[in-house]
Length: 569
Image 1 (cartoon, one colour):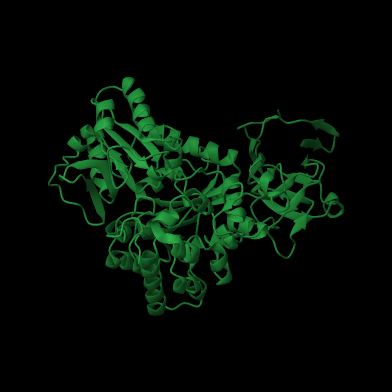
Image 2 (tube, one colour; image 1 turned 180 degrees about the horizontal axis):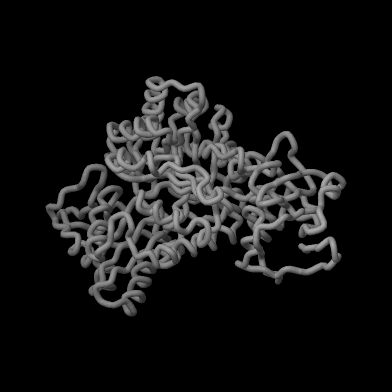
């Protein structure tokens, strides 16, 4: 890639990495542009002025518009597309995970215990050891002893006798605590399960250390209190600054120009207002996740669209009605195949979710509800339908079901009929496929698990993302999952539900923009839109399947500013 300064014809090879060029007037030439604009799907060149795209077209068309003081980026045929929009993730959590123990690579419970043992050797007594990313279904063997396949705390407690330990499941819907942490949380054998949660116990009634769904709050609340922190701002501003910086760096390095955050309390949104136009590079679209009482007090004054030069928008409410499939927390119509006495958990009452929906209507917010199991999805669709009938509008409110992973076939058409967006994460399919049939059986897995194509055929908008830090925020493996559903070479998970290449890119660009009422400024390379785009080493529309995962992000541009460029090898 070359910068050509036209008035002097000087060519300079740029070797930027994590550095930036200021917003500028720019022309991009000799590119292979996939615009995501169906009226004008391909182009060779574009022009940027003041952070916006002012022209898109052929070399002959654009050459007439290049001004003497413009910098010209010659891509020499490289693939350019709209910047990836992360459709459902947790921004500050993404950065925070980089600051704690990463348990995602562990192949056994013993490996996790050893990670904690090593950390405990250098951690001051009494200080919490935090980690995230373990998943019992992805270990090479079941731990011994175990309850329902989950380990008991003794080995972890022995490895860290002087520090409380809190290890969050990969799904974010379960936590593991050692004896020290349970002691701080005052967990006794007779401690009652909270509504919507379970303290997993041995046959004699002793707590194993596993806290499922809302029971996790017992340990988290104890941590907040022990560390003297607010429940909503869990750490110092310096800590949050570092988390924001790490998340920002990772996003732009992986081609993400916008990030839809799936739930922050008001206090964290207030914090973000101070950093979105400097410390944080990607544009943020944030769902509010706070109590109904707080919503009543703060929704009106918090709603904002395009704050700080389109770097922060807050116009959605987040709720969760069930848990996750991995830890048996998804709310199902019929019992789990591998846990016949359980149908999962309803983590928030229907009445509470209905009340939040009414607040969304009143204050003109989108409503976004986490629902993974088929019962949870049906209940949310019913809530949406009741609200739409009680409060008719000629315009779609674009309410969203976050995840929409496991559906009853009867409910698939309802997404298109009601105009409900299926905010999905394709990489969850290939990541979870190792245990989905165990949980649901083959029939339910085939008919309703990650049925992107069926939802698209219903007329629904299907979006894409990673739920980071549940999965790596990298869009490339997620796109690969979207179009192949490949677990490993030769093994796919019901490939009839694959998206086409075009559908896969749309789900990560223009569809995510539509799901946020932002299609007028994002999601495609069109005149008048923000100059947010990425340059990749492969053409994702045409390269071979086995080349997709080798694709590298060469450059990320936000508002005409180069915020990342891969260093030349």
